Amino acid sequence: MLELSDVTIRYGQHLAVDRVSATVAPGETVVILGANGAGKTSLLKAISGIITAQPGSAIRFQDCDVTGTPAHEITGAGIALVPEGRGLFGGMTVRDNLRLGANPARARALEKERLELVHDLFPRLAERQGQIVRTMSGGEQQMVAIARALMSNPDLLLLDEPSLGLAPIVVQELFRALARIRETGVGLLIVEQNVRLSLGIADRGYLMEAGRLTGEGSADDLLTDDAVQNAFLGTV
Ligand code: ATP
Image (tube, rainbow, N blue to C red):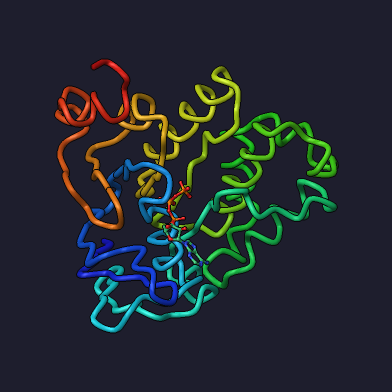
């Protein structure tokens, strides 16, 4: 469904992502693991059309070349990003944030059904429809961010460190919701530092170091891989 070939991203002279090739099959859940600064956020931004990859990079989605396609068209094509920092409209209500998520043409007619789906996934949002987002807890805001992305009726959801800054119990709740989203058939590409929980719901994973992919494997293999254990799981 998503195919990255030789994706390279530069900020001036700085090479942030160096010829990354990776795939996500329809309905697959894939995790990218890597330290801070490895280039994971840049990669998600390039897929979402927020930044432009270097010439020679190719991003294909559902058999279309979407390299360099602007962000709103990428959402319209069926890719939704839940950015690091969430990107919500803090002064607006939950309801209005979710409505804005349903803006792409592919989602407008389905707004009611999508709302039922996200309320089923996150019952707390159904109870808090009129709450101003900035008055919510971090975990609740993350739920709004994921729910808003789902309102666009995506085939692929990109999640940038969804667990960042959240209490362990909230993170567990969030990953239970992600596992349910996965069951609906939506593909997930997740950048995460929480290795165990993210690999726990994933089919496959990639390791990213200093802009390059340095390893890949099934989620089960990565969970027992020495390099992953040493780098991320602190079980040396
Ligand atoms: P983190 O988990 O800290 O967000 P990351 O793996 O997502 O890390 P990126 O945010 O993609 O990494 O950053 C990759 C590299 O590119 C880093 O060295 C970072 O400093 C640099 N970088 C990112 N954004 C910019 C920018 N707008 N201008 C210049 N350099 C940038």
